[in-house]
Image 1 (cartoon, rainbow, N blue to C red):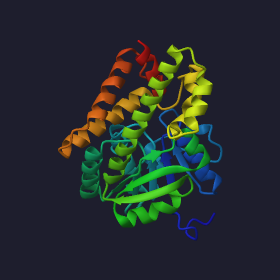
Image 2 (image 1 turned 180 degrees about the horizontal axis):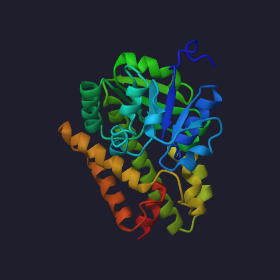
Image 3 (image 1 turned 180 degrees about the vertical axis):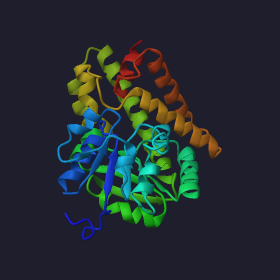
Image 4 (image 1 turned 90 degrees about the vertical axis):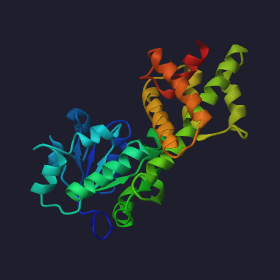
Length: 296
């Protein structure tokens, strides 16, 4: 693919080839876009056919670098030193690079991070959290919520279209993460509500598959039920979106609400429930495993 004719950045890299990063990378490569890949465990990057795996963050120096990492500190840690991104951009003489934060991060923290990066190094940070889960990533139909300068958004939007189907710009850096916070209230609430429903149905000796068929045929239907309903039927909570990440998101939600003088009672309740799940040692399970906490 001719990047310029397609409106794509001249060079692209991706950091973090985990459950979300790997399918995003495959979609970009499938579109014919050359892609540099880095992951802390390099073997996880090497299994992605067609990518150019590099050993250091500095070697990913590109016009646009996508980070698909759990939180902002992991991104910030890759900036400095001889092996860091800043040194790589300088050596490659790349002017005005864009760093995209695809992870779910604090709206307050990412806005401050973006200000620091632009002021100190001329680096533009775009926060573009994702929704749609690993299935959405694999199928190239993620929802992408963008915060950042309009010009930067216009540079990355054609790239985002390779793995996203709903792409919306909201304003300055941090606004994308604020929308993701809104999304995560609904996700956490829906997961917990469905877990409670399954617990009640199970306690009555009902067939959970039949119960879910009724729920999916009415107002209670949701993408969560479609993607994750089998987890309660099979009692399989391995992999997926972890409870510890769900709790991280809920902490960002309450932090953001407090910063705006709001009290969100449901979000506070959900945070408490997932704190109990982690306290029980289930933090690495999929967040649907809150079912186990409900039953204890």
